[in-house]
Length: 266
Image (cartoon, rainbow, N blue to C red; front, side, top):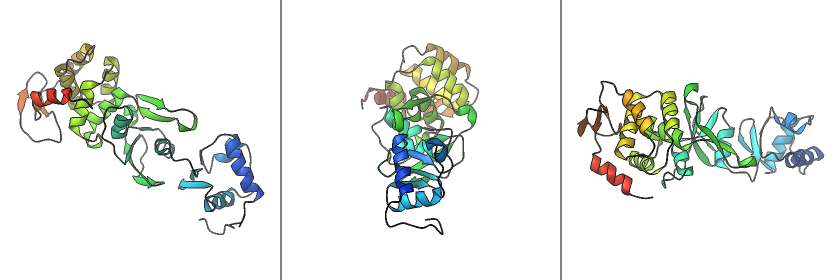
């Protein structure tokens, strides 16, 4: 609670008016330095109004300067509200797109801004910073006050191959790629934006192995990116397995295991 703020025993006229304006403008989340313009009303001491409403448990403080109504708890909306240029991504997006049944209690948020991982209103968040060139493939989930940005299916897959430590498991990621319908043009564009040759090679090899429909254009693009360096298929796995010269990959997960993963349904 801020210093030198008077906490009234009952709701004052200003506090009641503030809550009514939130309802009138259908606002669930807001920032201290923006809310008066949003509701077209100036208060004598906005900080005191908000501190009283927090104390009376009518609004919740998400973090410094950011608030929501006390009954609003959409963790995806909150996570993308607290940092600009952000989207639900990686493991969280995989789950929301139905690409994995594995569920993380942590919400993964991709952003072009630096932000420390933290727990907000009881939910842990991991904020992964990317450069602006990688911010693409953003769509919107939900409606109205529950609308939030999320990476689309193709970008989610590319991002997870790019940073598999945030994917919830490499086997699950491979199975997701094998079973979901994906767009060749989007995969090309997103691989270009991520600019990770090893990732492009891995995805290209897997789309060819799984005989993904309508992906020849992407596979041709991926083959054109193959360089002279061998990479492990699973970058977090052991140095072992067959060498595939055409893709410059070492299969530390063999083809039979890969095909078996693709046959397993969620």
